[in-house]
Image (tube, rainbow, N blue to C red):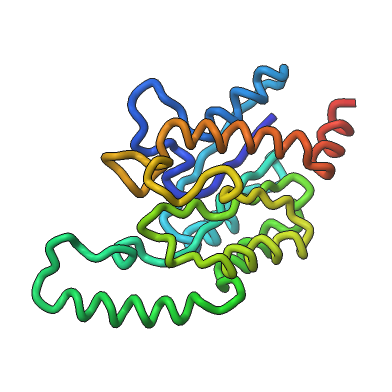
Length: 214
């Protein structure tokens, strides 16, 4: 079984101490325990635009399972102002934040997100889409209506949508002390196990897996 995973640094388990694994590792471990040989190809991408370009290059028909950790392109340096702002920063921060938040506050998905869904649509029978992982400092950049719009649009197009907000919250205890933008080991395990359960229960993917096995 060959799995493709595209997302941000979370898919690599960024920030975790040596010996601890990210949610992809937990997910793969559960599949392996079920008796399935697995190879994984990870592609951490800094922006949705990079993800779009990558999808245009990859031979998607060669993968048995594709996982896309969806996200928002709201820049992290705008999420929280520096603790010691330099002269003029605070005014610039508030002006740019207000402009971007206005642009993102519409009840729809971004053009890049739509482009990625379009690229994945021919393979949606083997695609799992994860909603964005929102850390405490970025909660304002992904309001509830935007997350819901993303999930609903995915469902409307026939994708299997895994909502990460059902398993972790955007509060400090789910994130690393030294890297508060990234999930801690407990959160990775929670998501990895829940993603496996979701994968097992997804009708279209289960059907395809059964047909190939038999």
